[in-house]
Length: 203
Image (cartoon, rainbow, N blue to C red; front, side, top):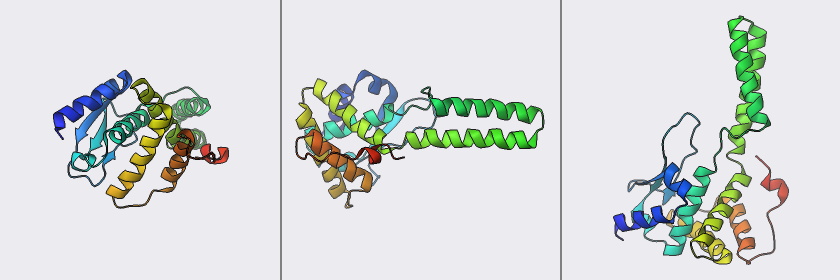
């Protein structure tokens, strides 16, 4: 595998938003095939996608394509400042905290600080929920369709990529990956059993 050629292909594969928001970084010392971290709201700049290309070469081209698109979709899908009820509560709590500090009101500071912490925790959990993981898979499949794959092919390639990566890393699939795999089997017409809605919404 020519590293420069592979990286160029992966960048070209990305949607435009992925090219702007993410950066592929060769990480030969890491034990994982591909790794991303949940970007924090205070982190500026591009969001890195760390790839061990020595392990990466063990995947087929379609598996690599879908795995990369899935990582990009997961990163650009993180929304810390998308307006919702928890964002409003966090903002109100933070504003209240500033006011209470200026007035030296200890009880008010505790209440405002508690509201801010609770709302921020909910935002954090929503960005790490199973639904977010499934959304990232489905978003990757949508991009793959625009790149010439069919929906069924894309789902099956991503499913096989999940399983192959676990084998390369010498580990079992974790609980979230098992649920993602089941959802991909449904999309890939390999199973009629859908992921229960209560698990999808659980944080």
